[in-house]
Image 1 (tube, rainbow, N blue to C red):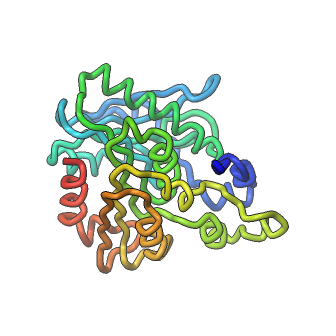
Image 2: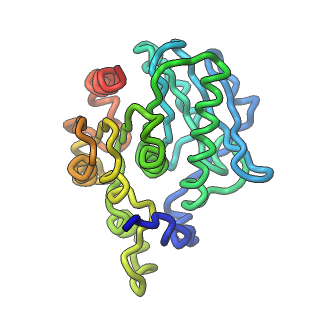
Length: 263
């Protein structure tokens, strides 16, 4: 029997969860104009567009659709994209509603549903610019949810899934947010369903996590790896690294893992 992953998702739009999960920052289009980067907008609803940032490196290179963490915006990756570009990796970073150059306000349900038109915008952008390399989806922290959502739905188009510092259990995530009491009188909430969806993701998968992650414990990353339905699955657990300093403690290993996975 197919699982209805929409079940319970709207419950995550409760204000108590919203204010603990999302930390949006705005940035104007003018402030987001940088050399070697292209602003790309994807319409997700009437009057609402999501701002994305494309960092082209090589026309035939791998293309990564990247969903960032809850306190970041796409232009923050102006400083990280060059590291990907050195490896010939094209990076397409998507924001959420209310973040960066995007319209609207973020919610859990819109983040998951908007991922689908963003994926279509990603492929359209690549086609317009003549990029022919393989397609990958990557999510960091909160971004693991839309990334796993797309990997679950578009396995024929994608060559791989990368999850960085992601969470597995919806219940554990609610507990960390101090919001588990909202669901006490209800059956087990599916919510994002990362742990359930990844069981059905058969494309190659790479899990990256810091051994000392103080926000989302490394056990969550290990659980995602164990639950993954992929025959080809890989992991990188970086010693001494927390939630936001993976590149500080393991940049070479981090990029080597991503480059090797996408090649």
